[in-house]
Length: 386
Ligand SMILES: Cc1ncc(COP(=O)(O)O)c(C=O)c1O
Image 1 (cartoon, protein in one colour):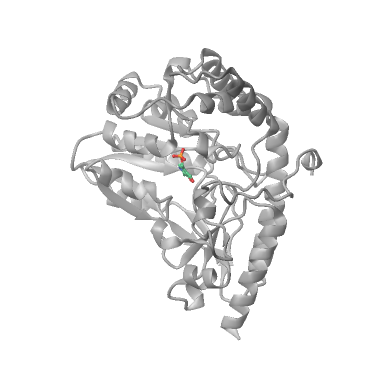
Image 2 (cartoon, protein in one colour):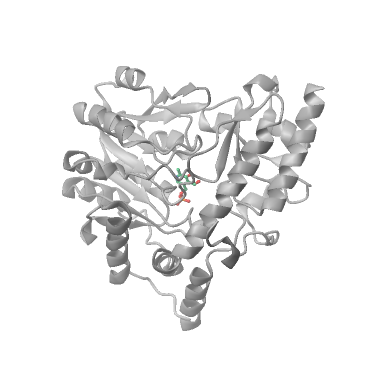
């Protein structure tokens, strides 16, 4: 606990009436929404201040990526990950899911194969099909709740038409922060079969396990960087997903040109306030970020402590993200999400992640609300097992 007292993550902010995706789902029901991945906290004060300042200017015309923002990203990547990036490698996007879909269109051609490891964040499952690519889903291995790549299976499932692997690191939903060894093994396979890696690193600022560090895939070595499209954004860490601002880092000129070509005429620039918020987030919010991580670590302990005491369901604490991946396979419930909705808690169905039998709980909220939800879950599951 270093900085938590300076910032207030405890006081609830009423999000009803703001057309919040998360809160609208259960608008007129007493169901605590713990599904889609945004947090119920206010963004850092510096982000709010920067938006106020820019709003006061009053003109919101088409806006280029500010040069100082490119320099800021370059220095942030160098300082945080010892990653030397040239400003021209950056491609700005209005969202990271946009980047996943653009990557699928940019690499290979119609009917080629795109691979990912499941369970996985749902847009990984739809992006290939939207781009007329086939999806190859490689199941991850689970050992006592600890999820890993199944490299043998992965290599066996590669086809002559496999052009891209979409990687999620840190991983949503299983919460893993992949080690250098794991990333290097995956990258070596991709290199061997000349597969491009699209590395979604949106959760990289949310490492909760203090023994782990985020390793951008492109920092493994120059050859791997050459076949990697990295996608990053400030949106998860600083809770600004509604401001639509993300970026790709692509060092390979040809790949970058293909990516930009696939965007042409379809993908708009990020909005003006998104740039402003990103600038403030990466330059002024280090203390808020530390305090957030402290708060989320205690929330994670709260969730895993409570789930441990519940019969029939289990979880392994996430190493990163504010998402808990809960195993409900032993509960005998046909529809665990419906069951918990009836108990007043709105989880996200694992089936949407190609992980049926699991549910995802978003613990990015004031602790009191989290405890209320966990108590509701406890009562419901106790009644079920009684
Ligand atoms: C792995 C991953 N990628 C992308 C996104 C969404 O990115 P965006 O809102 O910028 O499209 C999320 C949101 O939960 C996510 O978990």
